[in-house]
Image 1: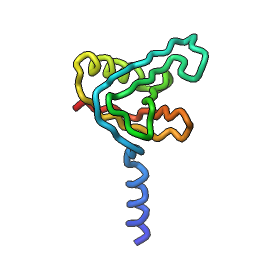
Image 2: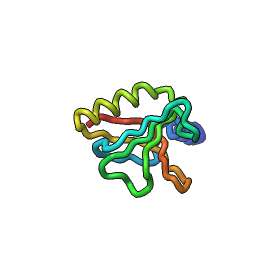
Image 3: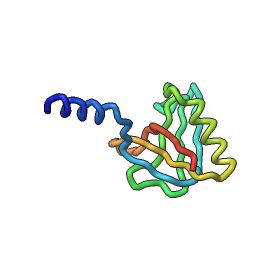
Image 4: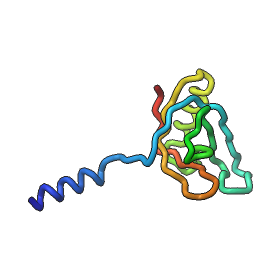
Length: 106
């Protein structure tokens, strides 16, 4: 029984879990340069046409390992007016800049 519980616990811990997911079309992309004076420095904030109530913007930090892929994806789906699903964590600050974990193209 102990082995089964341990196996179940490990499988749950290794599962990719996102706090939330939301689907829509990209309506706005803000790109911030290296000399921007606040925490958006070098990053991306973007919105979908129908934002969820728990996020004002979706945030991608410059340090994200998939930064270039996310940027290319956002620009191409914006141009094509394609629908995407954004998987994100909830930001508890007053700004509600939700950090992006993954983007799926519909």
